[in-house]
Length: 191
Image (cartoon, rainbow, N blue to C red; front, top):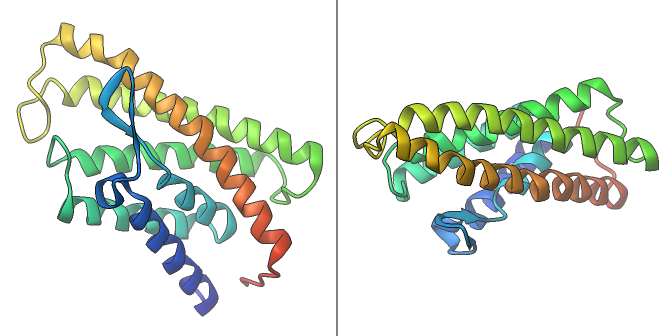
């Protein structure tokens, strides 16, 4: 990774950590499940993934998980790792969409298609991965789960599914918008 990429990755990492509701208290509890918090912190991860490259987005995701693990684990000590799985699965959808289409997202209709497909694939992968993880882990004892019965676990899956889907619905399009604005405003030569 060259110096420009490293510096830009550091900026996006700092933004991610600073915007994390666990650190900044900037977030909105989901009205249907107040233990789930809507925040803005995943947007810089996806923007870095798009602007700098997958290595940057993945590195920031890992760093964020470590920061959460060290300072705020949430209900469960393993929570930051579940969050990491959610972000990584969403990034997989974004990655596939960008591989299916050209990387140039500055063209009108092409950009709309790429953002739409990336959002749909981000939702798809995040829903599948997190449904499996939540189904398995919520039934486990603390510190990995909450010792829920299978019936209670199945009852929570729609709520976490709604949450995971709606997070992607705003995160991915906003990250593409930010990436597009940065690309238009600043001439970045990251090679």
